[in-house]
Amino acid sequence: MNLLAHDLGYRSLNEIIRNTDEDVVIDRCYGERFIGSGASGKTITINGTPGNALGAYLDGATIVVNGNAQDAVGDTMNDGKIIINGNAGDALGYAMRGGKIYVKGDSGYRTGIHMKEYKDKKPVIVVGGTTGSFLGEYLAGGIIIVLGLNSEDVPVGNFTGTGMHGGQIFIRSPKKLKYLPKQVCMNTADESDIDSIKEYLTEFSELFGVDMDEILGRPFYKLTPNAKNPYKQMYTYN
Amino acid sequence: MREGMFRNLSGCAVSGIFSKSGKRFSGELIIDSISVMHERSNGLGGGFAGYGIYPEYKDFYAFHMFYDNFAAKKECEEFLERHFDIINLSKIPTRKVPQIKDEPLIWRYFVTPLPTKLASSQLDEREFVVKCVFRINTSIKGAYVFSSGKNMGVFKAMGYPEDVGRFYRLEEYEGYCFTAHGRYPTNTPGWWGGAHPFALLDYSVVHNGEISSYDANRRSIEMYGYKCTLQTDTEVITYIIDYLNRKKGLTLKEVCSVIAAPFWSTIERKPQEEREELEFLRSTFDSLLITGPFSIIVGFEGGLMALNDRLKLRSMVVGEKDDMFYVASEEAAIRVIQNDLDRVWSPKGGEGVIITLEKGKS
Image (cartoon, rainbow over all chains, first blue to last red; front, side, top):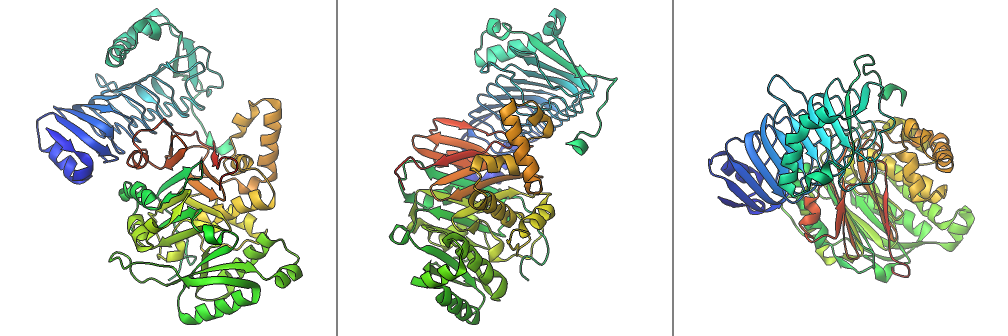
């Protein structure tokens, strides 16, 4: 099914998507919100710039964006996959609890904050470029991988992993990360660490045509919570 | 009820378009951009600022006025005649739009200070104009100056921005820069003067967010003679920028380091010279640090500045195509008017993007 987003408006557009089992291709997309929210069992392809809260509460559907996405992609998503052939805005994968998000380019501030996992529910975000500050803030579970493929510096901003108390963050970087908050432990990822994320790296490589040798051609640093030094009162003293 | 009687908080959408070569374009483009973000507003305020729109009167201050009634108009015009040479005056042209109701009297005056008055005031010309604007806004009941710069003008009203644009016939104006605002106040009595942009001289500010340091900032700026009449964040931001840039002579980049100063922990890691400068700015003007979420677009004569709060709690995207610069709360609002961008990116929190006309263009 082909839909013209801007002509329909976001309400009609989302109603049509909700009421069909067919795959959907969306053109003329200029900021229409909530596309694919709660969707399952179909593939939604968007040519354009989808609006905020793309794939919020996604429940098994696949969303492919040919372009850049805006803020709050995959908010609280439960299952499924979001593939962005471009950049994503702020708060990507906020409070995500399952499924996967792949971003070819950069993502904004607060990527993957408040993510959590439970048993087989393990959310994964892979960002090919760089991210803004507060990556994985309050992370409680799941895996965030930042590749920095377009960067010769540390590909993340300040305050990475602040308040982190679960999950893992992998950062591919030419330099060690400095100034991490005290509640975060950093180690160079060893072979078994890389093996544990290989399936996501492979999928990224296949989706966006990036050579696996290039991806593995730099060290990865693995961030995990430091149980000895829990989060406290960051804003009070700044 | 007027704004200023209680404080209101807002959401909002912002957009800006700037031609670095100074090429003038129609105001229609900015209406197309801001209307894409309709959902970010709730119809309680919309507005625009245009620069380069009055070339035939470019040496005169353009006062845009709201009057509640003819008595206010008469009193204000008497004041203007005592202090200024009025070169031209007229109603600002509008068209009837069903969505825009209860309009005040909306007038425009092109003025220049009377030389004798200016000399006896012992003020520089721009300070004289500012004093007169505050005088009208605080002491003439029912009169409000909402635009007072040269070769620029603010157009604002109660309503959605696209309706406000059509109401003011914005497509009939041409300028090298336009900014726009769609307002989503969560708690407001609603008054035309409370819509954005806020402007003083040629500075205009459109703002998305709600600053948590409002009262600290207000108390501080009022010590320097500014009068916050509306209790909205944006009014305070406008005065802070005027104070730091025009009166204290800080560059706009330095202004960013004051109002969106980095965390002390970030400053500590900077190279010595930069660290000392940042420490100086943050310490000297500590009560002008603006905390809480904001993204603002500041227009000024010959330039445009876009800035996020230091934590980047609001969205802002900028794009470039040839000599055109675009900035908006959402990328879609840029794409809808220029899909083929050379570059598009999101500035970091506290990192001001400052664009000015190429040399010799105006």
